[in-house]
Picture (cartoon, rainbow, N blue to C red):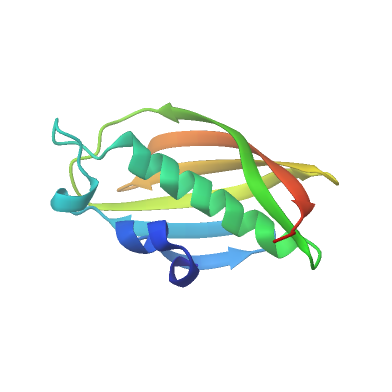
Length: 127
C-alpha cells in the first residue's frame, strides 16, 4: 500500500495485511519525523495510520470502477507515545452501496493508544 501512497511512504507506514474487510499496518516511531513540539507522537500520525488503514480494508471490497473517500472520522486518543512500534488494525463494520463504516485501533506495546470510527463514501471513479 505505501508504494502508491506518498503520505504513507513519507511517514514510513507499512502493511502486513490488506484484504477485504481488514488491514494491519505499522510504523516505527522516528523522532525527527513523527513527534510534535512536546516530544510525543503527533496525533496526525495516528490519524493518518487509521485513515490509510481504513481505506486499505475497504478498497478490496469494492467492485471494479468504484473508489472511496473519507466522509468523516472520529478519533479518540488515550495515551501518549514517545517511542516504539505503532500497529493499526482496521475492520469494516458495515458496507452499504454508497457508504461504509470502519473501525481502527492503534496499539503500542500491546496498549491501546487511539481508536477511530470512520464513514467512507463509495462512488464511481471518474478522472
